[in-house]
Image 1: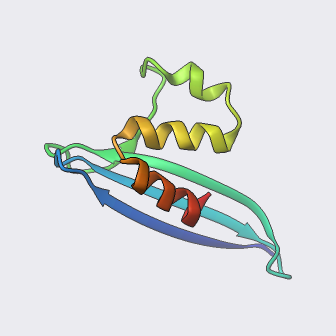
Image 2: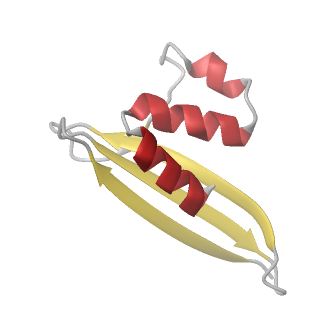
Amino acid sequence: MENTLIREKVVLLRTGKMVKIVSRQLQDNDLHKTDNQVDVLVREQDQENFRPFLSISHPKYWKFINLNPRQSIILQLKYSGLSKKEIALVIEEFV
C-alpha cells in the first residue's frame, strides 16, 4: 500500500501574483520515497483560481518538456517571478 504526502507553499509576489508549489511524494509501507512530483501553479490578481504555469500555448513549453524533471521545475520557478533566494528555499524544501 502506498501513502501520498502532499505539501504546499504559496508565495505572494510584489506584483500581486501568487505562485503555489505543490509537492506530492508517494511512499511505500517502509516509508521509503518512491516518487516525487512537484507542480508550479500561478494566480494573477484578477483570477480566482490557480492554474498550471505552463500550457501548450506558453512560448517555452517545449523547452520545459525536453528537460529532466528537476531542471524543468527550477526553470518554471525562475520564469514564475520568484527571486533567487525564494527559488533556493523552494528547491531545498520541495525538490
